[in-house]
Image 1 (cartoon, helix red, strand yellow):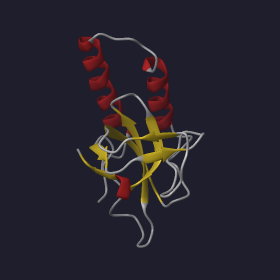
Image 2: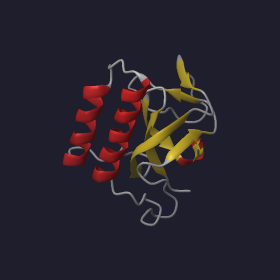
Image 3: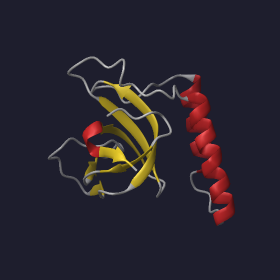
Image 4: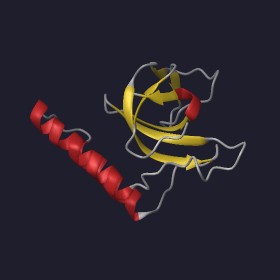
Length: 133
């Protein structure tokens, strides 16, 4: 199943994390993993196993700049809700919004970048690790 940019998803299984902040393949072990059931929002997608999303575009720069500005902020619940709403608007305005399912060649999978509710951003998640939230 393909997920559009901005879709709410959750992990179907524990996902090990590599040192560079990407999802490790099935069967990999490491010192850090994200627990199954953790919910988040899709912020990027790329067709194929080797690519980790589009880079160098204005949209990616805008999203990265936004994340950099709000990453370490300690916000009360009202301000946090406003920032989450603004994040969703930035994602919707800069992402393709249609997912990659229709244009993906048979035999290739789509990898996703997900910003989880706990603030962790994980890149390189395959479709089998996600389910709609």
